[in-house]
Figure 1 (cartoon, one colour):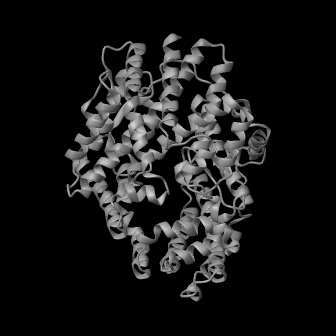
Figure 2: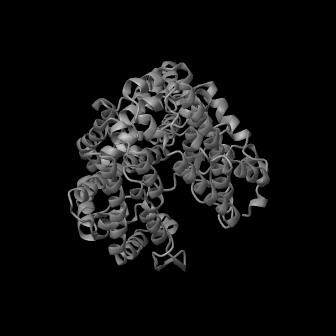
Figure 3: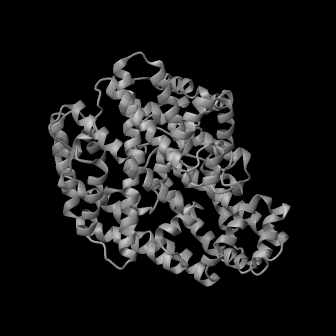
Length: 588
């Protein structure tokens, strides 16, 4: 389908950001002319001067954010259109220049004594920036001189080259072979592999699995060097700033207590017997004498998909999220009717789904809606992101409106859990109920267990490199294979190829990101079950979290909603939910 064939109501209203490209061009020209911050240099020792600087930087940042999001969205409508790719590149470049121009700010403020910084943070005029200023006190020992900070800012581009090289290898030069599928020879792609590995044909799954990982095996040395380059980039920054480890640096930058990461790994290790039991139940349900790694993806229940039109799916989401109250429901309707959402798959449109938001405009959602259960849940998921952004921007000033990545997947997953619980409680169809329980267990398996496995791999790989051990295809594959055996247990035959899986995980080039998916689903299950159990009081607490932006550290924000990630019982609740679903499935 071409974009011009799609009804207007199914397209996002991008003119709510800029009415046209000419308006974008005018704002871009205005930003380019306001990148000189030299007048503020050497003046940041009074509340008046600090406020003046912050307001000036904020004005430019907000414009760059709008420029970026418009370019990003226009580009994703049709990725073949090079005009908006150029817009994106120009915006990224101007943001990089802003970073270099303002590199003096942090060193200049951290040169002040703690008492002066605390006084600034407590000044009513700087209330919008109090969290930022308090964080500066904690950051002082890791901040370098102005000249060194500028060098680090300039180094960010070359430090990203490993990730760019991986993307080029993975998306353009992997040289995946052909496979016969649906009666014809086709080029195996990432998308087609995903379709086949989730499909019913076991022999075809095995063939695709072998071919797919065989392609990675052929360039494993290069991929190992690429990943090692990414790890060395992390170590370079860690050493430059004086952190004990790359992990501690990542946690510090998100203002997350180190104990949270350790608590996650500890809880998942304790929960592995339930995961191993699930693998055994899957093996028995599928009727296999041996269950291989290419057998862990297909649905346990066939032909029980929800096949709904977009309108029917959205109505179902409204019903499923009703426990969040009238205000939340009205915002969901506003998003649908106000054209926040780009619904249909069209030629050249970016695949997948996401939510994006610029301060001062409503959020937007990209979908490629198909009549599948997954896509119904995707509506709930992406609108969870959007309404989180909506509340954060509505209730917080710009400086505190952008919530941290650590909590970014919580609201989206709360919506998925609530929708699933609604479907389980409302359906009388035993087959559909089994399908939904399988869907829920796989959500927990892939998001809590699998992402923690990834996180543990990252931690151990970084630790090896930090201790002076070079990373190569052999020790990386050995490490990943051992973790895979630990996480999936004896019910699975651990094919040799699964040891190469580390080489295709793009998230590894954004180090220590994946564990946030695991903590996110843990918090989300805890919050959703509390909402269903306690009603309005829990909803009120949850809205306090949604409205929190980055007004304080993310662990404290989650605590407002009743999910304390410093306590074992929060993780235990998620594991219990997994176990309960498994037992209900077995009973059915």
